[in-house]
Length: 144
Image (cartoon, rainbow, N blue to C red; front, side, top):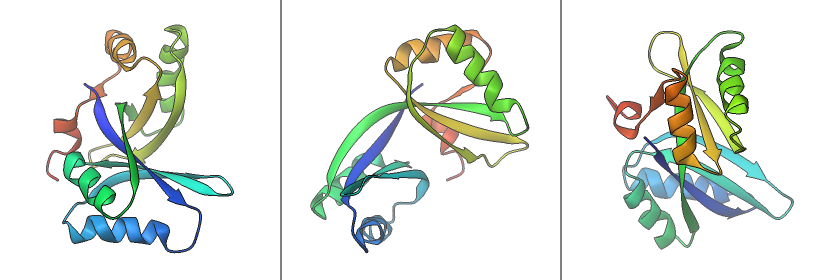
């Protein structure tokens, strides 16, 4: 249960983030969550969208450089210690996190952690075996 994430490389100049978001909006593509990391010269906009193939095409047609990466999303209790519990399972399984970000889920008291692992299949297996709920695309975009 992996999710496709788009990574868009942006020149670190005013208006570039807006241009990417405007291109997606013009195509009717809603962004579920995003993360933006920067360096002095460029930034990496990481996006999760339901129609990722269409979004990739739209961004490339607008001149963007886009990479598709498989990430793993887990449900976590949105309370103190919720993330620590998931990280304990990850540490005990010897999984390497390349990066992660989080967002508030739309149900009850849950949040979602999005991880990029060096071995996504092993991560899904280990997290599921430990009782951590791994969320697939269908559930993530339910009602969207």
